[in-house]
Length: 95
Image 1 (spheres, rainbow, N blue to C red):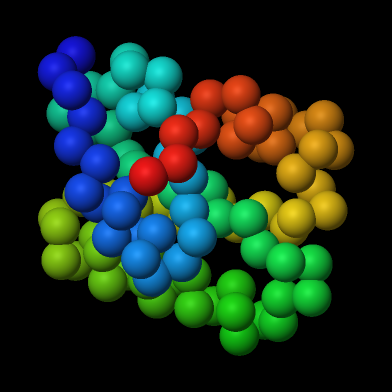
Image 2 (image 1 turned 90 degrees about the vertical axis):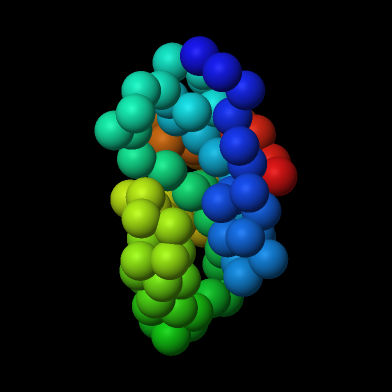
């Protein structure tokens, strides 16, 4: 796979703190792969904060014509041993 263009991740990060787990981070993505953006949120995040991630995802999907999947994760769950937190800790690359 050619070098990954991380401009979409950087733009997401400009709008919300994000990292990139999954296929793209592991280097086994294909042309139709979606962009999973892991966003670690403070435990005191409000429902409004969580909804803002959906708006950012929608805007970036529209602007870049690439499907952006937001994967929110509460800070307290970052080391809970779940598959999601493990993927973020092990595979993710920050932009």
